[in-house]
Length: 248
Image 1: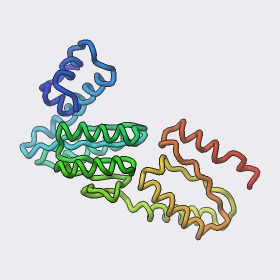
Image 2: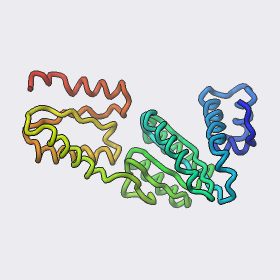
Image 3: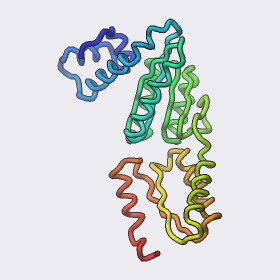
Image 4: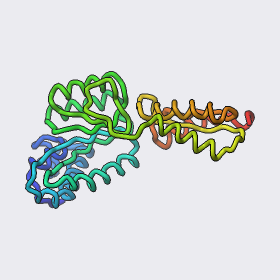
């Protein structure tokens, strides 16, 4: 892929070393397919930001780290690339770190690599577990602010949480179900990707409590733990609905 960007720019965007980027661009040995894709993705991102680079404001690099299904991450990437140019005259350059099912250890490793390379800020969607909270505290000590989005990691030094009020969202969903059910009996299937995502868990708890109040004759069947991925979630649903026809 032809491009007008210096190796240093591509290295900064991809989070790779200059030597690795050089090997990937020239088709040399010892470059994995994943690394090659990261380099090409960085060039695509730089190309999309080219118009923004004409601005003469301050240039800032931020890192967006997300554990979520690809369909979610793709929408987030699209939104970020549309919104960030509106911060002109500042030039905000996003570097994306997306994984569908990375787990806490890999997320911490990603955050550690970002800390070594440097960043003006991190936008994070991750599981609310002790190792990730500890890494957020460490990043804050290094003067790298962390903002959590969609799902929170409270009780740590993150700068802010940006997202909806999850408990109210769960209660609102229960209210809408109650309006639709109109006193009928039955079962409602609920699912979250993983309990360690604090926002999802808050929504699920509030939904269950409000459903018990508004619809006491309705049972809830939980099919959680599939990480939001099709195969894992389908397996959880099959388990949750097994024998359901005999209960209704």
